[in-house]
Length: 465
Image (cartoon, rainbow, N blue to C red):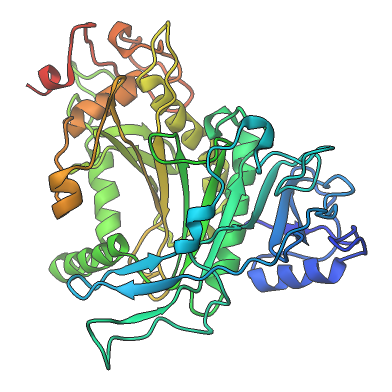
């Protein structure tokens, strides 16, 4: 059940006039329980739809009634965006590659006082015309995919199977999680994180309804090591006109599993990981997890675990315990628990490489996988979160085997990674090497944790032996 996202109407649009019709029309297209009129519900999510100076859509998401002037005009002298991208199919693998040469000119590491994602202020106008905001979503000025989806569908490889191509139509949006330039997603409180979830859900409903969109992909890149060019806390949403390679592999594996067992692959996967916790015994006090369990967090509605064949040194998958195809399928109980679980998980990644003298924000990619059109019955909503850092001072580079052959070689055993992520829980110290075992059955606000006893000299390689 998707949350109610109510449109704010009657406020000044980008042209200075009341723009109620635009907001109401957008609400009707989402498929959510949206209605015209300003929200008066305490804590309800309200959105204000407006336009930037070059015609791109901008949406503000607020908890409760938004401030007046949310739809303040964008006064920048911007030319209309004219991206030129195309998609080409690799004849050897069938994968689609997007060619977007215009992105070479995108904004690259601007100084903090020129950040285009901060609110506008006198003397410095940004992509966000308002003087403050809670969550803002807008069309990317340098999109990899742009144009009206469905007007030019990706063509099948018929006449020229070696050179199949099409225009790069689709939708690329930027999601600003907070107006605070120096914050990160992990710094948000639970109400702010829930607002981001509501925005993801609203955008998923709207973009997936567009003709020609096969999959809606929400993700966050964090850290210069990942390649992020804007430091402000933000993510992106892509409306893809094709099924990307990793999703295609999941579709194939789910079909194989169904044919072999008669069951759903993702149901079995989550059940197997949750079963690894085991039952209490004399050697495993109530609530403690076996040393080889890959569970990191297990709530009533969500489970986070390191995958059995993890590709990255520290990689966690987060699933709702009840399989749903995308964000719109989550019920209110699942939405209510999500902020606590997700924030806890991100904060553990930040503690992973920090110690008492040094705080290290882990560079990561948070990739939300949602079922593409036509595969809602088999694929499952889930997060794949991973960092490219393998120790506080070492990065995991994709070199010959990974980049050349797509064959990952992991430097850290998944079971060891899960233990490390458990021991840096909310109640524990930042440095896992000095962590002490908590009293059996105690909790950090999520679920009881066990602790791996290590010494400062313990290395990843020694731990695996």
